Structure formats: C-alpha cells, structure tokens
Amino acid sequence: MSRFLVMDVVFYGSSLNYDQGSGNYQELKKITRWDGRQYTVASRYALRYSLLETGRKLGLWKIAEGDKLARAGSGDNTVIQPATELLLSGEILKYPEFDLFGYLITSTTPQNFRSAPVKLSHAVSMTPFNYDALFNANLGLANRMRKVYGEMKPNPFTAEEHETFYQYSIVVDIDEIGKADVFITLSSNISLGRDDENKEIKMKIEDVIKEGDKVKFIFKKGKDTEEITQHNEVKLETFEKINKNLVHIRYSIPPEKQKERLKNLIRAVLNLKRSIKGREEDLRPRLLVLGIYKNAPYQTFKDRIELIDEYSEEEYDEIEEREEDGKKVVKIKHVVSKSKKPIFRIAGLSENTKEPEELDESKILSLIDDLFNSKEGEISKVVVFKDPSIEVKLE
Image (cartoon, rainbow, N blue to C red; front, side, top):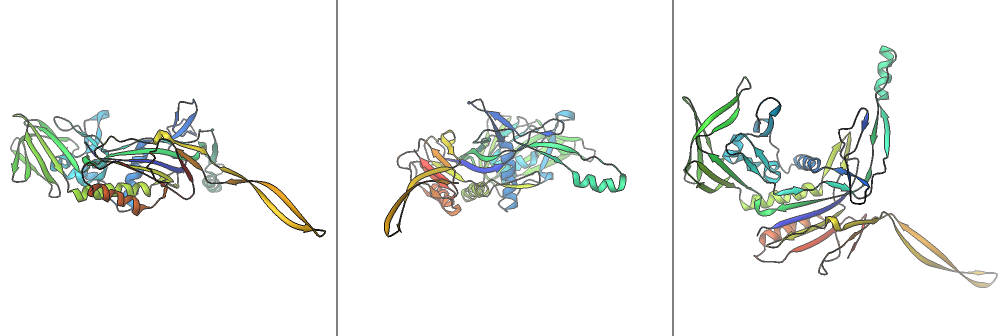
C-alpha cells in the first residue's frame, strides 16, 4: 500500500477568488453548504496557481517556459498542454507542476495522462458570507483626464468582500511523486509541435528502441527523420512491449529528489501567498493537522475542524482589600475578560495525539525525513501545529 501525507490547513484571508460577475458588479466565488447558507470559496485551481507562483518566487522550483508547452487541435478545440517531446524524453518530471498536479496530453496515441499525486480541495470559508460589498471608482484617473478633455466620468464598480478563516486539505500520494508512465502505439501519428506557418507537425513513430538503460524514439515523415532520446536527469524503470504495437515506459527521478520535491511543496504551503487585485494575501497556515500514513489507510480531519467562536470569554472574581476610615474593607468585583484569540475544536483525534505544537517549518520537515527513513510497517502519526494567535481544543 502507498504512503500518504495529509495536510488539513486553516488560514486567514480576504476576498481571495472572484467569479465572472456581471456588468460592474464583481462577485466572489461562493458555495452553499448543508446549513443552507453561502460560504466564499478559493478554488483548488486558484490554490494550485498560488502554490506554483509561491514556489517559483521562493526559488523552490521552476515552472515550464512557453517553449515547453504546445497547442493541440485546431480552431475552438485548441488546448494548451505539455509538449510531446517533454513527455517522451521524461523531461516532464523536471517540472513539479506536471509531476505533482498531473497533466493530459492529447497529441499521442493513446492519449497520455497523469493523475495528480497531490490533490487539493477548495478552500471554503469557515464563517458564512453576509453580502458585504465595497463601492469603488477610478476617480483619480478621471480627475486627471478631466483637466485635459473636460468632463470625464469615472468607471464605478462594486466588489464583494469577505474576510475570515478558510479551510482546505491536501492529500499526497508520496510513492507516485517523481514517476511518469508513457504509453505509445507504434506506427501512429504524433504531433511534434508547429511549423513557422503555425501548422501542426505530425510524424509517424517508426520504432522505440532500448539502448542499455536509455530509450530512443524514431519518427519519420517521407524522407525526414526525427529522434527523441531519454533525458539524462531521469531513470528508466520500465520498458515493456505490451503487444506488437503498444509500448509502456516508466521514468523516475532518484528518491532523494522525490523527498526534496515533497519538502519544497510543504515549504510552499507554509509560506503561501496569493496576489489578487493589487493585494498580497498571506495564506500561511494558522492551524495545521499533519497526518503521515505508511502502509495504512489515510484520513482527513477537514470536516472535524470547527471554529467555535472568534472570541473566548473568561469569568472570574477580583478581590480588593483596602482601609476606609480605619476599617478593613473587602470588595469583590466580577470580571468578564474577552480574548481575541479564535478558538478551534478538532473532533475525532486519537488519545495518543499530543497537544498542539507551535508551527515550525524545521519540525514539520523533520517528520518527512522520519517518514523516508522509517522501517516498513510503522504506525501512522498525526501531529497538530498551531499559530500563537489562535487556541485549539482536541476532543
């Protein structure tokens, strides 16, 4: 059975994902939950984009440049996808966006796809949306143009706003990181990009040859011949001719690179930022339930994390003693103290789970080292990390 890493994350953010809207009214993405109320959403696609951008800005990984991508199909049916050469050579494993989040390549026969080893849920607000909105206009630009052209009306618009805690989950199939399967049918036509006139270049695959621990693809079109060879940074794990026409190839990267890629993903989550409408939102976790599962079914606590109240109250009596007119006077004052720390309750954690630890990147990454260094059959582990700004109750 596979090893899994599960992260249930709570963060604080404001107005993170806008929908198409209508006219000059900008709507937030929303979803209706079981209680009949609407909650705002940052879609998993928005989270994926922000994770990739955060990792790129932090220097954790590179994203694929335009020349590593291709357009397949024609007209309105054109789709953007990784270039065929990237797949056949195994170079596609160099790019975490394809390795971690999957892909579909339609320009081969059969079509090649990769199920994402890293699965993200939508981030859903933990408090309902109350239809707060702000009215805006580009008044400054309009005033400048008015001095030159006379009357100039600003462009008004209304944007919905929601600032609260959000929650999402990440499930990582660790043993699928850094591995890619290629299925190719001999004598089929494969798209190898486009020419100077933007026409699709299609060539017939003549043969796939295994030379030592490397693979080479041979293509022909008339008198023209092309070759694609295995990228030098990937290893050939499997070369199998399923029948006389269908070939299966499996590439991989070394285990140390797999571990480092997983660590970089966690670093991106712990430092996640999202740029939206001129704002830089800090989406770092305030609460993180980290589950490590080896040879055991995994679980998520996403539906068991509850925001009880944004404030906590503590009642106590203050006793004051003083002298008045030579007599000792005792006064008892009842005090209600309000704390600004949000309180979260997590249900269903085992009795062996320790009290929440302070969010610390080095501690979290050390758990990944333990996972890769551990022996077969070790039990699962769930650890709760929290930011000092919140309180957590385990039940």
